[in-house]
Amino acid sequence: MLWLVFCAVALWLVVRRFQNRRIIEVASKIKCGVKTYPLVGHAYLFMGGGVNRMESFQRLGRDAIKNGGLSNFWLGGHYYTVVVDPVDLEVILKTSLEKDDIMRFARNLIGNGTIFAPVNIWRPRRKVLAPTFTPKNLNNFVNIFARQSQVMVEQLQSVEGKGNFSVWKYITSYTMDSVCETALGVNVNAQKTTDEPFLMAFEECCKLMAARMLAPWLHADAVYKLLPQHTGFEACKKLICNFIDQVIKAKRKSIKIGETNITKKDTTHDMKTFLELLIEASGGDRGYSDLELQEETLVIVVAGTDTSAVGVSFAVMMLARHPDVQEMVYRELYEVFGDSDRLITPEDLPRLKYLDAVVRETLRLYPPVPVVVRKIEKDVQLPSGVTLVEGCGVLAHIWGTQRNPRYWGDDAEQFRPERFLETTLKHPAAFMAFSHGPRNCLGYQYAMMSMKTALATLVRRYRVSTSDMARSNGCKPEDKPITVTFDIMMKDADRFTVQLNSRK
Image (cartoon, rainbow, N blue to C red; front, top):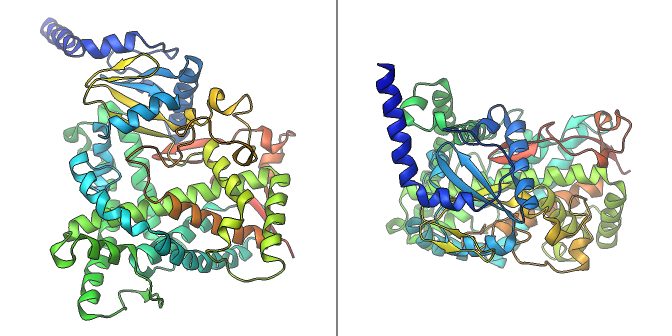
């Protein structure tokens, strides 16, 4: 009996190798200094929690940098070329638009929202979405960012001068309130709620998705549905989707009867939300179905809440670690606002050039989405000389690309905002915190405006410093790398712990 099993497995491996012979040939031409094993490939690296997963991604990224821009990554029997050279990445991201099959696990939550949708769905939806991100609409949203960031700094009074605390809850609640008001037209008051169910559910979904993606033995639905993780994921998904669905139905009704009240406490301004713009742009009642609206609204809410929150939180950490940079940010703010307490306006943001550089440098070192994946459907010859063949996957390593010394210099690992003021990028894809090419992030300007408004409001009121834990080992806090974790988004494993003191 054992001989039959052995023969069956051996035969399967031979057939599999024959089917993948072109992919194996590609892999053989690319150096990889990270050991791989039969059947599991590099999946063994990702066993454990989010910190271990991110350390493994960093290891693959550094290996690709060491090897001139490329490395290999086998997830079970599925092959990915790891790419950290922007010249190669630009070709890949402009010609290979299909997301890799592994993103089907993310689609379990988002559905066919544009961020993960197949190309045939993504392309027409992108055309509908793009006009909603006009400068006029974005400038209207700054007023909301300013008001909600003011709520954030008022909530932070409770931890001012009281030692270590996690700034994550305050910032992610700010982005949640801002996104829900701009995208849906509702004020959910997340900043004044102890535990916002939507945020908790989304964070849990991300952890479960990340763990499943990087464990080939959990890919089969028949296996995963037997596990408690599946039950937990479905419960969180139901909570998230029900909230979005209720808002969509209420918004459709309010549009028909000309009302402005939707649900919970409504906004009082006349600007149109993303949801209203989407309904109108897609054709009103004859346009997007409730499911299509749910998918696209979910993308906006989820991406706008978490990515912006991660960006702001890392920026706060970097300002705490670099008091000299924080002081320069404050001086710039003082030049614009003086001693006034007035709210930030859209006209203020372009004047905050150094703050803009700080945000970009933070996103360079700590991109909220450190890796993205694509599928090669047609052979692609890269400028580096390697030809990726049909069936290959590509791991576009954003974290590695933005730390590649070839494009960022010998100080690529150092936090130096001035680099964004002194010179232009050596290559357009060298900085791709919002991805690159036709499928880049549509909301990057929205995110930048939200992040800069929140940071400006916080630094005007408070001085942020490193936690006691960061100083306890005797070395400078800036010399100790931040321990990061991978749960779809990259975050600080210590939950962005800092200290806060009033500037007054």
